Length: 193
Image (spheres, one colour):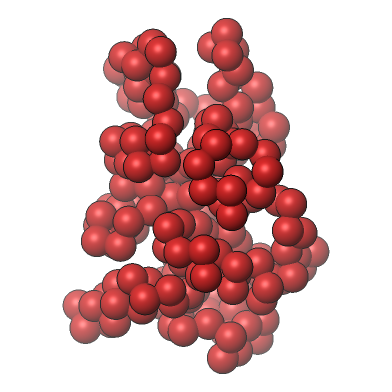
């Protein structure tokens, strides 16, 4: 497994893309800081080019890499800790990296609740991770289904059994601190912070 992981990390650092199990579904991942990898994923998914991807991070501190600042920093962090780590993606204002936000000036971030995935992200940096399916199709629930969709169009596959889960809940924190749920149902992760 260590050997496979080294190959995945090396590939992701060199604009590679691949299929891995996330904390929700199988995702097509690529470095969030590689425009080339991001554009490859849009192409093979047949994704609407105006729809931004969710970005997986390894810690709240990773948000600084995207230039995300908040005037009420401590309150902001406490709010995020109610949902993270967990299956909640939070849309935050971000004007950097237009190839990521696609003109929306906002990106959805998620801090997954899966130790192996967080360890991978610590080594590769933040990853875009849309579900492993062409747009409009059912997400792959295993590697066999993912290979039917993408074949040799990705650089690697990492098996993780069968994953049957709903996509992450998607929320937006408005300027006044109100939370707007855009997809799914909102539950906190149980953190008492």
